[in-house]
Image 1 (spheres, rainbow, N blue to C red):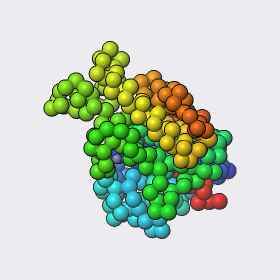
Image 2 (cartoon, helix red, strand yellow):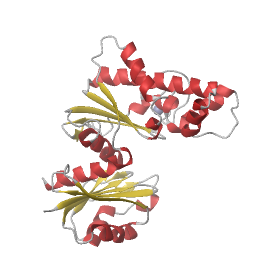
Image 3 (cartoon, rainbow, N blue to C red):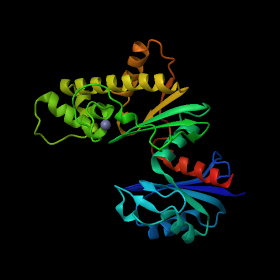
Image 4 (cartoon, helix red, strand yellow):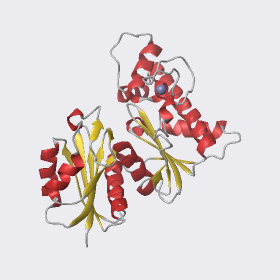
Length: 297
Ligand SMILES: [Zn+2]
Protein backbone atom coordinates (compact mmCIF):
# COMPACT_ATOMS: atom_id res chain seq x y z
CA UNK A 1 0.00 0.00 0.00
CA UNK A 2 1.32 3.37 -1.01
CA UNK A 3 1.19 6.65 0.89
CA UNK A 4 1.01 10.40 0.20
CA UNK A 5 3.29 13.00 1.75
CA UNK A 6 2.35 16.60 2.60
CA UNK A 7 5.02 19.17 3.45
CA UNK A 8 3.91 22.51 4.90
CA UNK A 9 7.08 24.56 4.51
CA UNK A 10 6.50 27.52 6.82
CA UNK A 11 8.59 30.52 7.82
CA UNK A 12 9.59 29.07 11.22
CA UNK A 13 8.30 25.47 11.30
CA UNK A 14 7.83 22.78 8.70
CA UNK A 15 5.09 20.18 9.11
CA UNK A 16 5.59 16.73 7.61
CA UNK A 17 2.54 14.50 7.22
CA UNK A 18 2.33 10.99 5.80
CA UNK A 19 -1.13 9.65 4.99
CA UNK A 20 -2.01 6.08 4.02
CA UNK A 21 -3.48 5.37 0.58
CA UNK A 22 -3.69 7.68 -2.42
CA UNK A 23 -7.02 9.48 -1.83
CA UNK A 24 -5.66 12.05 0.63
CA UNK A 25 -8.16 11.32 3.40
CA UNK A 26 -6.69 8.04 4.69
CA UNK A 27 -5.34 7.34 8.20
CA UNK A 28 -2.29 9.32 9.33
CA UNK A 29 0.83 7.12 9.30
CA UNK A 30 3.23 9.71 10.77
CA UNK A 31 3.50 13.42 11.39
CA UNK A 32 6.25 15.66 12.64
CA UNK A 33 6.96 19.35 13.09
CA UNK A 34 10.58 20.40 12.54
CA UNK A 35 12.37 23.73 12.55
CA UNK A 36 12.47 25.23 9.06
CA UNK A 37 15.82 25.03 7.31
CA UNK A 38 17.01 25.53 3.72
CA UNK A 39 15.68 23.36 0.91
CA UNK A 40 18.73 21.02 0.88
CA UNK A 41 18.37 20.32 4.60
CA UNK A 42 14.63 19.88 4.06
CA UNK A 43 15.35 17.15 1.50
CA UNK A 44 17.47 15.26 4.06
CA UNK A 45 14.86 15.80 6.77
CA UNK A 46 12.10 14.41 4.54
CA UNK A 47 14.22 11.39 3.57
CA UNK A 48 14.72 10.56 7.25
CA UNK A 49 10.99 11.12 7.99
CA UNK A 50 9.76 8.92 5.14
CA UNK A 51 12.37 6.22 5.96
CA UNK A 52 11.65 3.19 3.77
CA UNK A 53 7.90 3.71 3.48
CA UNK A 54 6.73 3.80 -0.16
CA UNK A 55 5.42 7.28 -1.12
CA UNK A 56 3.51 7.62 -4.39
CA UNK A 57 3.44 11.43 -4.56
CA UNK A 58 4.04 14.52 -2.43
CA UNK A 59 3.12 18.19 -2.48
CA UNK A 60 4.73 21.04 -0.56
CA UNK A 61 3.41 24.46 0.30
CA UNK A 62 5.12 27.60 -0.92
CA UNK A 63 4.53 30.88 0.89
CA UNK A 64 4.48 33.18 -2.10
CA UNK A 65 3.79 33.30 -5.82
CA UNK A 66 5.25 30.71 -8.17
CA UNK A 67 4.99 29.59 -11.77
CA UNK A 68 2.43 26.76 -11.90
CA UNK A 69 4.21 25.02 -14.78
CA UNK A 70 7.82 25.01 -13.52
CA UNK A 71 7.27 25.51 -9.77
CA UNK A 72 9.83 28.36 -9.79
CA UNK A 73 9.10 30.83 -6.98
CA UNK A 74 8.63 34.39 -8.20
CA UNK A 75 8.52 36.03 -4.81
CA UNK A 76 8.24 34.89 -1.22
CA UNK A 77 8.05 37.81 1.21
CA UNK A 78 8.64 35.70 4.33
CA UNK A 79 11.05 33.12 2.85
CA UNK A 80 13.18 35.16 0.42
CA UNK A 81 15.75 32.35 -0.02
CA UNK A 82 13.14 30.63 -2.21
CA UNK A 83 13.01 33.38 -4.84
CA UNK A 84 14.06 32.03 -8.24
CA UNK A 85 14.28 28.40 -7.04
CA UNK A 86 11.98 25.40 -7.59
CA UNK A 87 11.81 23.94 -4.04
CA UNK A 88 9.41 21.08 -4.82
CA UNK A 89 11.63 20.00 -7.71
CA UNK A 90 14.69 19.88 -5.44
CA UNK A 91 12.89 17.92 -2.73
CA UNK A 92 11.64 15.56 -5.44
CA UNK A 93 15.22 14.86 -6.50
CA UNK A 94 16.35 14.40 -2.90
CA UNK A 95 13.71 11.78 -2.07
CA UNK A 96 13.15 10.35 -5.57
CA UNK A 97 9.37 10.86 -5.39
CA UNK A 98 7.31 12.97 -7.82
CA UNK A 99 5.97 16.14 -6.25
CA UNK A 100 4.55 19.59 -6.86
CA UNK A 101 4.12 22.96 -5.16
CA UNK A 102 0.88 24.38 -3.79
CA UNK A 103 0.31 27.93 -2.51
CA UNK A 104 0.24 27.84 1.30
CA UNK A 105 -3.01 29.76 1.79
CA UNK A 106 -4.80 27.55 -0.72
CA UNK A 107 -3.49 24.38 0.96
CA UNK A 108 -4.67 25.58 4.37
CA UNK A 109 -8.12 26.52 3.09
CA UNK A 110 -8.62 23.31 1.10
CA UNK A 111 -7.42 21.21 4.05
CA UNK A 112 -9.82 22.90 6.44
CA UNK A 113 -12.74 22.90 3.97
CA UNK A 114 -12.31 19.25 2.95
CA UNK A 115 -11.06 17.44 6.07
CA UNK A 116 -11.58 19.98 8.88
CA UNK A 117 -14.57 22.03 9.95
CA UNK A 118 -15.98 22.19 6.41
CA UNK A 119 -15.98 18.46 5.74
CA UNK A 120 -19.15 17.09 4.25
CA UNK A 121 -20.17 20.46 2.76
CA UNK A 122 -19.93 21.13 -0.96
CA UNK A 123 -19.58 24.91 -0.76
CA UNK A 124 -17.31 26.37 1.95
CA UNK A 125 -15.77 29.78 2.58
CA UNK A 126 -12.66 29.76 4.77
CA UNK A 127 -11.42 32.88 6.59
CA UNK A 128 -7.94 32.82 8.18
CA UNK A 129 -7.42 35.59 10.74
CA UNK A 130 -3.66 36.07 10.94
CA UNK A 131 -1.39 39.10 10.77
CA UNK A 132 -3.26 39.64 7.53
CA UNK A 133 -6.57 38.03 6.62
CA UNK A 134 -6.95 35.41 3.90
CA UNK A 135 -10.15 34.07 2.41
CA UNK A 136 -10.93 31.28 -0.03
CA UNK A 137 -14.12 29.94 -1.56
CA UNK A 138 -13.91 26.18 -2.01
CA UNK A 139 -16.51 24.38 -4.09
CA UNK A 140 -16.29 20.60 -4.46
CA UNK A 141 -12.78 20.61 -3.00
CA UNK A 142 -11.46 23.20 -5.48
CA UNK A 143 -10.66 26.87 -4.87
CA UNK A 144 -12.64 29.36 -6.93
CA UNK A 145 -9.73 31.69 -7.61
CA UNK A 146 -11.51 34.01 -10.05
CA UNK A 147 -10.53 35.20 -13.53
CA UNK A 148 -7.23 36.73 -12.33
CA UNK A 149 -6.61 34.54 -9.30
CA UNK A 150 -7.61 37.42 -7.04
CA UNK A 151 -10.85 36.16 -5.45
CA UNK A 152 -11.37 35.75 -1.72
CA UNK A 153 -9.74 38.99 -0.50
CA UNK A 154 -12.13 39.21 2.42
CA UNK A 155 -9.57 41.13 4.50
CA UNK A 156 -9.95 44.08 2.16
CA UNK A 157 -13.68 44.47 1.97
CA UNK A 158 -14.67 47.88 3.32
CA UNK A 159 -16.34 47.82 6.73
CA UNK A 160 -16.19 51.31 8.27
CA UNK A 161 -13.86 53.98 9.61
CA UNK A 162 -10.83 55.87 8.38
CA UNK A 163 -7.98 53.59 9.40
CA UNK A 164 -5.44 53.19 6.62
CA UNK A 165 -4.99 49.56 5.53
CA UNK A 166 -1.84 47.85 4.20
CA UNK A 167 -3.62 47.62 0.82
CA UNK A 168 -3.98 51.41 0.42
CA UNK A 169 -7.71 51.61 1.16
CA UNK A 170 -9.27 52.78 4.41
CA UNK A 171 -11.70 50.93 6.66
CA UNK A 172 -10.95 47.37 5.54
CA UNK A 173 -11.84 44.36 7.73
CA UNK A 174 -8.10 43.96 8.33
CA UNK A 175 -7.90 47.38 10.05
CA UNK A 176 -10.37 46.08 12.67
CA UNK A 177 -9.31 42.48 13.30
CA UNK A 178 -5.99 41.86 11.51
CA UNK A 179 -3.43 40.51 13.99
CA UNK A 180 -1.09 43.35 13.15
CA UNK A 181 -3.78 45.99 13.74
CA UNK A 182 -5.42 44.99 17.04
CA UNK A 183 -2.47 46.37 19.05
CA UNK A 184 -2.73 49.70 17.22
CA UNK A 185 -6.45 49.95 17.90
CA UNK A 186 -5.76 49.22 21.58
CA UNK A 187 -3.10 51.96 21.79
CA UNK A 188 -5.58 54.43 20.23
CA UNK A 189 -8.31 53.36 22.61
CA UNK A 190 -6.00 54.03 25.56
CA UNK A 191 -4.85 57.32 24.06
CA UNK A 192 -1.25 56.13 23.98
CA UNK A 193 -0.55 56.39 20.26
CA UNK A 194 3.23 56.31 20.57
CA UNK A 195 3.41 53.21 22.79
CA UNK A 196 5.04 50.04 21.48
CA UNK A 197 2.50 48.10 19.42
CA UNK A 198 1.13 45.06 21.25
CA UNK A 199 0.37 41.69 19.71
CA UNK A 200 -3.15 40.35 19.26
CA UNK A 201 -2.45 37.89 22.08
CA UNK A 202 -1.50 40.73 24.46
CA UNK A 203 -4.76 42.51 23.67
CA UNK A 204 -6.72 39.34 24.50
CA UNK A 205 -4.80 38.86 27.77
CA UNK A 206 -5.55 42.46 28.75
CA UNK A 207 -9.25 42.02 27.96
CA UNK A 208 -9.33 38.85 30.07
CA UNK A 209 -7.72 40.79 32.93
CA UNK A 210 -10.55 43.33 32.74
CA UNK A 211 -8.89 46.09 30.69
CA UNK A 212 -11.81 48.06 29.28
CA UNK A 213 -10.08 49.60 26.24
CA UNK A 214 -8.94 46.11 25.19
CA UNK A 215 -12.50 44.82 25.57
CA UNK A 216 -13.80 47.67 23.38
CA UNK A 217 -11.20 46.86 20.71
CA UNK A 218 -12.19 43.18 20.63
CA UNK A 219 -15.90 44.03 20.63
CA UNK A 220 -15.32 46.29 17.61
CA UNK A 221 -13.27 43.53 15.96
CA UNK A 222 -16.10 41.03 16.42
CA UNK A 223 -18.63 43.47 14.99
CA UNK A 224 -16.44 44.10 11.94
CA UNK A 225 -16.09 40.35 11.40
CA UNK A 226 -19.89 39.97 11.69
CA UNK A 227 -20.35 42.54 8.91
CA UNK A 228 -17.87 40.65 6.76
CA UNK A 229 -19.71 37.37 7.41
CA UNK A 230 -22.97 38.95 6.24
CA UNK A 231 -21.27 40.30 3.09
CA UNK A 232 -19.74 36.90 2.30
CA UNK A 233 -23.15 35.36 2.82
CA UNK A 234 -24.83 37.92 0.56
CA UNK A 235 -22.28 37.51 -2.23
CA UNK A 236 -21.59 33.77 -2.22
CA UNK A 237 -24.21 32.02 -0.07
CA UNK A 238 -21.84 29.28 1.10
CA UNK A 239 -23.19 26.33 3.10
CA UNK A 240 -20.43 26.68 5.70
CA UNK A 241 -18.06 29.47 6.75
CA UNK A 242 -14.98 28.31 8.65
CA UNK A 243 -12.99 30.86 10.67
CA UNK A 244 -9.48 30.04 11.85
CA UNK A 245 -6.00 31.52 12.21
CA UNK A 246 -4.06 32.94 15.15
CA UNK A 247 -6.61 35.62 16.11
CA UNK A 248 -9.34 32.94 16.24
CA UNK A 249 -7.43 31.09 18.97
CA UNK A 250 -9.33 33.07 21.63
CA UNK A 251 -12.75 32.67 19.98
CA UNK A 252 -14.78 33.80 22.99
CA UNK A 253 -13.44 37.34 22.43
CA UNK A 254 -13.77 37.64 18.66
CA UNK A 255 -15.23 34.81 16.61
CA UNK A 256 -18.11 33.60 18.80
CA UNK A 257 -19.46 37.18 19.37
CA UNK A 258 -19.12 37.76 15.61
CA UNK A 259 -21.19 34.64 14.86
CA UNK A 260 -23.85 35.82 17.35
CA UNK A 261 -23.93 39.35 15.91
CA UNK A 262 -24.20 38.06 12.34
CA UNK A 263 -27.18 35.87 13.34
CA UNK A 264 -28.82 38.83 15.11
CA UNK A 265 -28.22 41.34 12.28
CA UNK A 266 -29.10 39.09 9.33
CA UNK A 267 -32.18 40.19 7.39
CA UNK A 268 -32.55 38.73 3.90
CA UNK A 269 -29.42 36.59 4.26
CA UNK A 270 -29.45 32.81 4.03
CA UNK A 271 -26.89 32.36 6.74
CA UNK A 272 -24.27 29.65 6.42
CA UNK A 273 -23.34 27.36 9.24
CA UNK A 274 -20.53 29.22 11.00
CA UNK A 275 -17.80 27.05 12.49
CA UNK A 276 -14.39 27.39 14.09
CA UNK A 277 -11.47 25.80 12.24
CA UNK A 278 -10.50 22.33 13.51
CA UNK A 279 -7.15 21.35 12.02
CA UNK A 280 -5.11 24.19 13.55
CA UNK A 281 -1.49 24.27 12.40
CA UNK A 282 -1.92 21.00 10.47
CA UNK A 283 -4.43 22.35 7.94
CA UNK A 284 -1.71 23.28 5.42
CA UNK A 285 -0.05 19.84 5.57
CA UNK A 286 -3.43 18.13 5.02
CA UNK A 287 -4.09 20.48 2.09
CA UNK A 288 -0.71 19.52 0.62
CA UNK A 289 -1.61 15.81 0.92
CA UNK A 290 -4.88 16.54 -0.91
CA UNK A 291 -2.94 18.40 -3.62
CA UNK A 292 -0.70 15.33 -4.00
CA UNK A 293 -3.80 13.11 -4.32
CA UNK A 294 -5.15 15.50 -6.97
CA UNK A 295 -1.90 15.24 -8.96
CA UNK A 296 -2.14 11.44 -8.92
CA UNK A 297 -5.80 11.23 -9.89
ZN1 LIG B 1 -7.22 46.61 2.89
